[in-house]
Length: 274
Image (tube, rainbow, N blue to C red; front, side):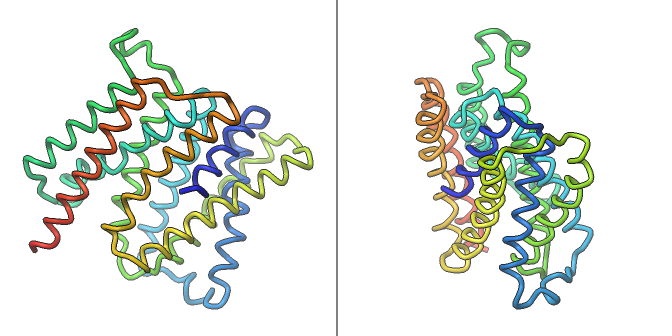
């Protein structure tokens, strides 16, 4: 989680100077180097997917999520952006009904509604109406929805190792953004080159750590740690930009996190009872 929030902080900083496409390119291009290094001992085997169509769809969704999220954090505090992205697991539960044919019981429906209530507290549409919601927040809500679809498609991938998925998403993102980057390019300063490299390394290492974590412990142990990212986002936001979440953001975050943990707990119980 520290790696992922470090990535987000680097993106937010670079977007103050460089284009969205160029910054997104750095994230995927240098993450590809990390992925290739991780896969090197078995690259030929890992490069072959049993579900290439799903892997391509995953890659497009992750690229879209990253691009829209980066656009959103330009004008939104990092802690607020992180809190809004906590909606993704709740949206996954909602989307699993039409996309995976799963049944959601009354208790999980209550969890979903509480999660959206928490999001409303963070966004606060009652202050100026829906038209008063900032563009950045709207983009982050779209990013959360795209990320939920990405996670749903990930659940459908069968037979591929996690490193194969990591390789596909990194390489696909690097190829697409490499074609677009020359049209939006501004030559980075030496320090900014280091930050571009750091963004890819942070993203790549974050995914590698996540893969190792899920191999070392059950999902029920690993998944709740994703909410620790709010701690890092708050610290980065305060130290770099002087942003500190207000009481409404903390309250909404607590409700979203609580509902997400409850939904995850219910899903685990359902899985154990099958």
